[in-house]
Amino acid sequence: MAKYTLIDFPSEDKFIKHAVADFKALSTEAIAQRNRFNVALSGGNTPKGLYEALANAEINWNKIHIYMGDERYVDVTHPDSNYGMFKRTLLSKIKIQEGNIHPIETHFLDPHESARQYEEELGNITLDLVYLGIGADGHTASLFPGSLIPTTQQVAAFFVAKLGNYRISLLPDLINTAREIRFLVSGTSKKPILDHILQEGEPAIKYPCQHIKGCEILAYGL
Image 1: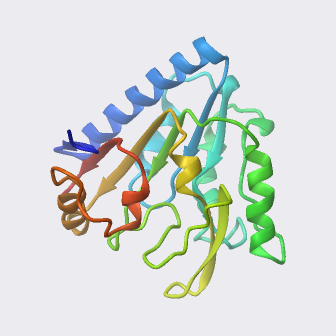
Image 2: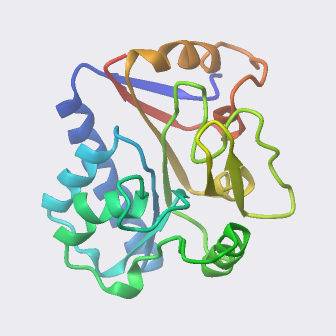
């Protein structure tokens, strides 16, 4: 049985329509069963259209808590800030209590303190849904090739040499406890990576994204 399931959409519109329906179904079920829906958002370009569509969808955000899968260690006003992107595409357009939004803070002098604080913020919650991307190098969240992934933490700070800055990221041990995980993928540069991880059997661990347990891959433009 394949570890991952690929759903390859013929257009971004169909990708977004499916993802919005999926979000609404999962959030409705979680709130009915547990009175709360915890979702971790992904940065990158692929999910922007989805977030804009969610902002326009009929969703009651009162019992939805929004977390982050990772963050670039920059000010929230910086164009590279994931939180800034979430705010522009989604958060500024919906009615949601401030206490339901859980950003990764980037004002600490030490990025490792930011990671420690976010792990405290998460506490013992179980995430109902985690959105993740896959980069052209196979990275996911801020887990890049060559990253040494700690086994005693749930959130960590990584210096990404090729980007020249720190990233704060949830780690696989935490992500893999989520009830549902969705990779959101677009672009032809991702196809060789998907071809590798979708092989039958147990393909060799070649990319950081393979540390994430089996889940649906929602894709377009491959």
